[in-house]
Image (tube, rainbow, N blue to C red; front, side, top):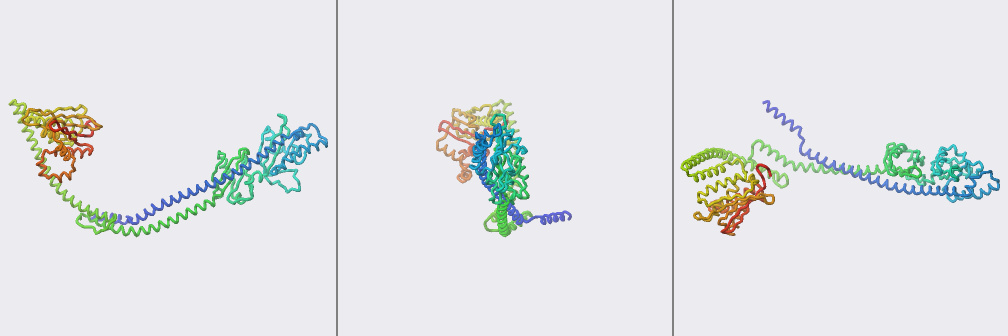
Length: 626
């Protein structure tokens, strides 16, 4: 009673906890469809995002390249201007004056040196200033070009320029503190500028002056300081000290924290490239290029908020559309599964009846499709089960009978062995040694035939059995049979099917010997050799041979399929045609069954001369493997 309750409880829990197949299929279907959709959407999103980033980088690199070209053109203009100043003879003479000049001399220098410098500035309207600062007390200040060097000794770059030995130095300034500006011109103090500074030394080792050529940021960096902006990007210049130079009053720049991109820029060792960063919750892309001659970097920072928003919106719309499609397909699939699983429930109930031991019923499922085919095979399975039950009962009875026969054969074989031994002893006592040897051979044949512990034997065992057979048959044919062996020692352990050579030798004796009363001796030669990686064993006799027609009939019989052979030859015909190749056919079929169709027997013959049967086997050894 307790076991029944436990079984009922277990079935109840199992039924309650089991999820219906229909529900599981729908859930699996949704997951199988949803996961690829999500992965595909993410892949497309990343692809779109990377493609957009590449396009933005490519566009901004082109902009930076244009700006870089403008900057280097301005630098060449400023360097050329500084070189013309240094090369001007009148300027050199004025800066090297060793006495106070008279008024007329000053007027002469003003018309020459000073006017030359003014023409340089007027010919290059982008230049803000051309100045010469000298420490020569004999040189008078001539506004706005010649100044005393004492005006710049307090500048942070003064010492660096003075010690540069004529090398050009580029200095960034946030303002233009020009003490000599014209009061009629609006103040430009707040305009940043780039200054070219170079020491002038007409005599090696002697400091003469410092040349200063200035250009305002808005002219030196035309695109960076342009007031025409798209609102989604802004160009900037970062000098060697890490100071950012750009339009500070834009709404775009006010959203940025400069440390967010300056740290990344300092960590990047490459002269150009791009990177992404986040500032105040917004993602930005920074495309940069190095201005190596200025010791600065040129940046274009682009907001990714708008491109990212568009891509995310496209991705979300795609996911929503896919989810809606999946939901529609899931509902449709649910109802289709209801129709399909209705037949499966019938099959389920039928299987329960089979489990209970009922095999005699039919399934009420018709039609095609997988379920109909399953029901058809289930009917066949029931039929097969019934047949197997009957066959099992018959086999059980046959097994009992075989056990009795086996016991009887064991008794009979022991009786035969004892009888042969007694006959052998009697023959030896009467000194009939030929008869004793024949009885020994016959006993060996009987033991070989009855001792069937394995389907495989060594070639040496089969040859010994053949020798016993020939010894017995020589009693009948008055020693007209002779067995000749040409088998190398390494092939004695060759593995072959038991009783595969003896039928071939027996066939040679029955159909090859010329006449029982003649004087001719028939030689049966057994050869073994390796051929193309296979074992080839030939049985050759110099007997009667056979005609070409009979040889073809024999080959046809040996290679005929079982169904065709049974259809062509009835049991009575087989008995009447005993010795017509059926033994060779059986050997050939056994070899092919065990080793494959590429192995078997080949028969050749010449009428009145010889017959040869070649057995092809895998090269295997029972003691040493293949």
